[in-house]
Image (tube, rainbow, N blue to C red; front, top):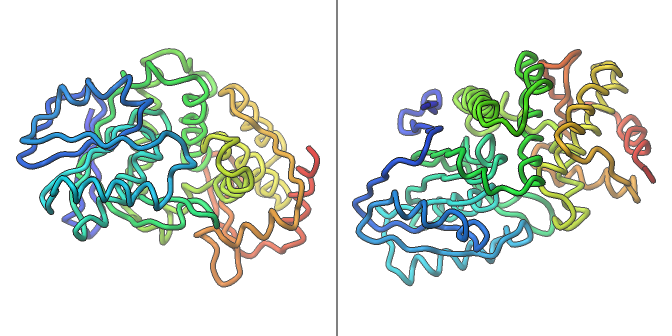
Length: 350
């Protein structure tokens, strides 16, 4: 299955997303595979077996969200310079969202931009992070605050990679799937409620539908000036949860799941979502083995963290919410502080 990315008015930004068993990939210049020891143990040889190039170098970086920072990117850059990579060289991101984000960001900077290819190995990366060209790293102020929009030359999604994925990582990917279904597609949401997450056919359908939904959004809005911001449902709250726990307590998808519950509570308060549908979404998150509770210890501090979010501007926080029912969406920027605080207090000591 091939899903095209064709960003409007950007003829130079066309590439394909391949959902299939890895095929031979030919390059006529140097290639570096960026990965981590955990992924390399399971999948490096498989990747090496399909890559044909004059030189293939492997760059391993430490495993974990806490290493998604500028220091790790500088280490990758140093290795590229040491190996005399040039502007025609290619980077391949073999791993989850952390590897993909850092590799893409490195590619965007090296000699003002070289090609890179996504080869995502986690469900979260396959359905979301590898598609659309968002790259970047975290710092002490928040998540992905240093980065660039930089599109890959191709995305190769092989569902076989998921065979070695720990259950917790798999569940984290489902959070991003649920996010897209709630925002854009009630029929897909209903499918998820009945789907067997251990069935390969169902998983391939989930990947394909998620990628199709995201590709449709990215094709319209590459740099998140409009509809693409809707993909941040659950993230405004979730990024604060990640930051407050130093990126070590929750996987990204787990934090997004918590953020979805918090966003739905806000939607409830604004009359944008019924209690029945909020409970239904929470039930699907629980079916997916995702966390739905978080204890806020400092409500005011949690609120202040919102202003470090990339979607906030002019002192207003952008909240992505369901708009009346599952499958619809709205971006709200004019919510009074006391309404937001009221919602946060529901999670105080929860």
